[in-house]
Length: 265
Length: 280
Picture 1: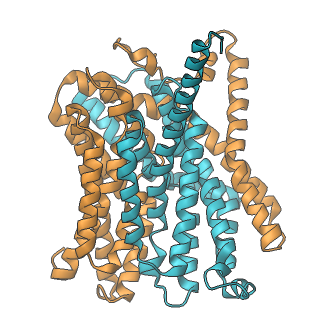
Picture 2 (picture 1 turned 60 degrees about the vertical axis):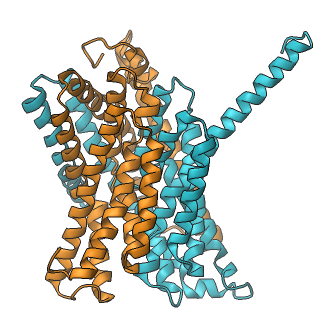
Picture 3 (picture 1 turned 45 degrees about the vertical axis):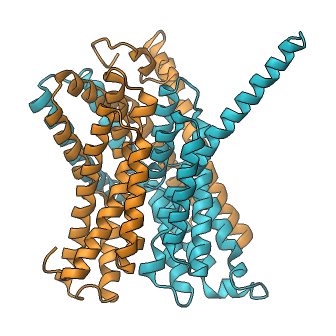
């Protein structure tokens, strides 16, 4: 019974999100485009599946993983837990927090539905050159590094904009040398990483850290982990493309060498 | 199959993944079952890392038993089922409608309506975004504690509302700029780097309390429903317009939509600081 009530509540909440979008789309379709939607039955079925699927997804997360994940973030940042490593230095005491930040950043990104959507599209548009899993792992790695570094920043208390601005500088330099085709996709992957799955857990971690560590404020330090998670994937996705290009070039060089020696690769 | 008219090069854009095409040929039912099972297994694999991480920390680091194992199993089952349905819905609903709208606008040739559509889509999907509502409410509480605004209920809710409108407006504007860029073929990196420079400049003069929220608001704007839709729109436009490459010109809308809120939220903070909450 409890499950049923929760399901209906989540479904209603998701509907409230979907209705403005559906109204805009179908409104423009009817009043501006003035043409019937091709395959209207399937499109509507698709919308219904998105609605039901997202509701089940959110409700499942809320029932199973979020409470445990939030509790974990609290326990790992709790003074009593951190103090058990007091033989270590100030910021080293929090080493489990960094590992947790890395692991939870990577694993939640792998399950992020909007990243799956973008990866599917990128794979189709690039004619298979960009692998769905290659992109997802590259983004996950970026989020993981970003959140681990962001947690370390909260512990140390450095201003957030130093890191973000330094990150921008790296992005700009990489933009100049990375393969041209990847650049728009890399920029996009910064924005898609942080939605339904990642934000609630990561925000709990950031606020937990800011509340525990003396001298940090929730306003200035608690926020900002998500910003880290949006900058670092840009770098890792461009890095992924650079790596694939380098490997392809090395392969081509080898082939040339074989031809020169009169052998087949 | 979704688009009834032929567009050169649209072959590369057939939106259905191979396993789905199998559903509509030959043995429809067994194909459908197979695809469903395959999708379920995919979702299970997508979710496995989170479960492993949580179990590892619970048992080995915190050394505590898992509470409510039954609830956990049921919840995980829901997540897997939900993800599977969502991905199917993407390929049936969100991707095709996004692309077919892009083609329809390109054929209609009305720049004005296309830009109005882009703005409405950005604004309406963001203003009701639950993550944004949560962040704005939280930000207003902390702002009143920090003395940025008065501690009254009214001041807090007007601050949160102002924040939401600011972010929604900037996402709408981002999509307008992004669509213009696809039409004109402007290189994305110039826009993004220009945007970064603006972010840095505004950071220098923004009140310190708003910076963290501003940087975060860039990330929370793009929801699970907006991302596929906007991506399909961009790729559809870039494929429908001659001389545009969907890979180079189709992506980039999300990037702009994550950048503009940072700038505008900081400007909102500056105005609020300078003139008090009566003005904005």
